[in-house]
Image (tube, rainbow, N blue to C red; front, top):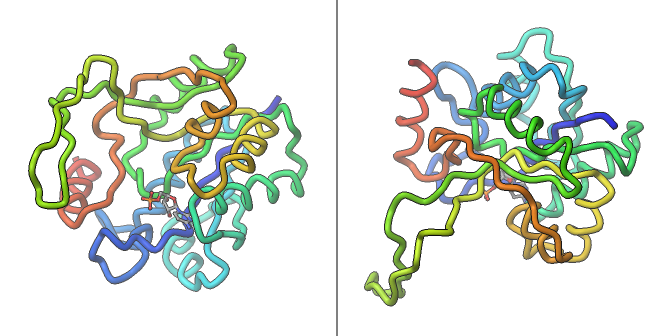
Length: 228
Ligand code: C5P
């Protein structure tokens, strides 16, 4: 089986306050999505990366490709209304381009632009021999609170067995497609859809630095980390 990367980049990034889809915001001299694709292209065991854009996207070539001379990854404008639909569109496109049920697909958020090739290698090492697959994740260090709409604590949650789920999330194409079809738009990641089938994905520790650039203050932090 081969390993493909799939990057859903069809979101609008409402929480970022950037006034444009956040994957196109410039960080350390190039759009966030260019950093993400460059990191994946530096992993030799990934045979190809497919980026999923919105059908209305008119920025990718002039910004991201312009920042990545010689980039040979695949591009498909098959994004949907939810992350899960964008991923399903990408999986169908991978099939059209020759991927099979047993091939592995590493789904990675465009917005996790600090990805390092060695974390992807750790995921591959842990999951290639695994029957289910798995994801990068980070054990929670903070005490966790549930809160209400007024900003008051309603409960403290035991953090001892809690992890923050990151990406890439790595499963066989046939399995993750079946899982996402079954769960639909409610799936905020691939692992939750696979779990709903009764399977237990493997947790592979990466780094806090593999965070999803989401809030306005995240951009400056990401720029510092990418520059250093
Ligand atoms: O919105 P959120 O940060 O959870 O999005 C995670 C990833 O999924 C981002 O890379 C975003 O571009 C992508 N996405 C997508 N299609 C959507 C919504 C989000 O490809 N409809």
